[in-house]
Length: 386
Image 1 (cartoon, rainbow, N blue to C red):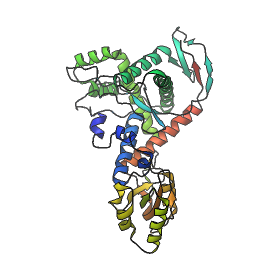
Image 2 (cartoon, rainbow, N blue to C red):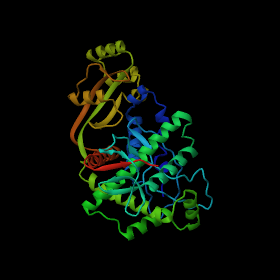
Image 3 (cartoon, rainbow, N blue to C red):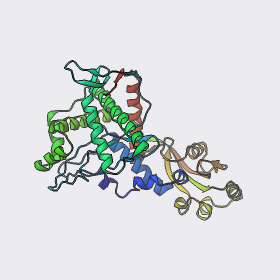
């Protein structure tokens, strides 16, 4: 299996992104902006859309859990679809074999009844929630909370005191939301006629687990998981992947896009002076190389590359202005949270193919909207845990 670290090792680390100042995040340039956007959208898509599985025949390993907040609207949470990937190595280290986790959107809670006393299913098994009548069992929820918290503690991410308690509250809420989303996806799959065959499950497990049975058994023991639970989790992942494919199949692969440049400065007076120089006929790219304070794009004449209206990370004011300009037109001074921009549009196309990372971002957005719609129309009952 190819790990996320192998897939994205050449892109900026998420820890590095977290260290960026608000200004730096708002002036990410062509080369870095595209790679950062790719890292975020591909990683979020790969994790959120549950497709971070390796190809058959490749080496399988369990990546260390490295949860992080990608953007203010994304939070770390365990979900039942995570790819629990046992290692093929004989040596098993607790530091590298934590339960895998994925990322779900932090959205407003779906409509539901007020929390009530614990309920039980017909067989007496306690419930934590129901989704359109489908039970979510308390013991499944508690086990996922325990596994995810253990992973965060082992990685040194869980804080102490009041901050740590707040993290635990959010963790529990996110685990429950992940289980609710799983139920919604399963119900949608039934409506769509989407299924996972036994042959597909066996093939998937073979590609993930490989032949090292002893290593698998050791990993299952360490993570308090049975083989049946692993199989159920893998089946849920395959089912979700198929539903996602159906939902994202209608996402357009082309979009209106512009190719733009910008000159950036934190000083309004300087920005106005640069604008006056441009009005007198100075070359935009040359002036950007000399004067732009966005060091990463300055060397390329302020080149921001091609981008659609729905684009991550770029300041909305820059995007809106770029799409309002004609080809060859230069904007007035535009203010963003980072500072001041002067924008020039070099070209535009009504139906330009989306770059791979942009397409993944569009597919992720479509799936998020679809899932939010399912939540909005679901009857979700929450029960208090003991």
